[in-house]
Length: 155
Image 1: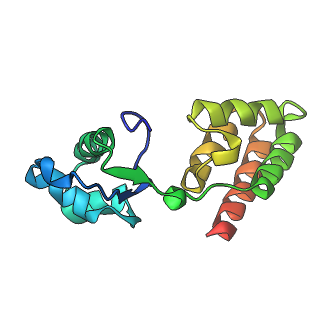
Image 2: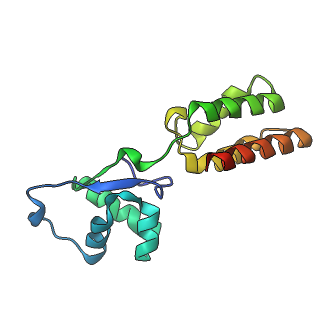
């Protein structure tokens, strides 16, 4: 798993039990992060609690992954479901026509994800990116209002 780029704040990791754990040496920051990785807290929560910058967390998590001392959990990121993408496609089609599905696929890829694993915490960012593709102001406003309402309903 590559944690060197992108938004990693919503990722969740858990410790891996290893018999040779005593052979590793940790600095205070690395040990502190390792102890917090419980399979429930996101990296953003851990950074906030420990007063760390995400850049520091990124380095520590990269090292821990390299040493195979942690692994991502399945609950790492809640993802958008097909219903959301269906609604998104419907709303964007009303605004720009049949090219909507292509715009959605391209925007999802531009954000570094796939539609099957698109993190729900980035839904607003996706809507903002797509909103820029709508030329007519009134259609852009309607699209944005409908999508903001849908995102609110999800939370």
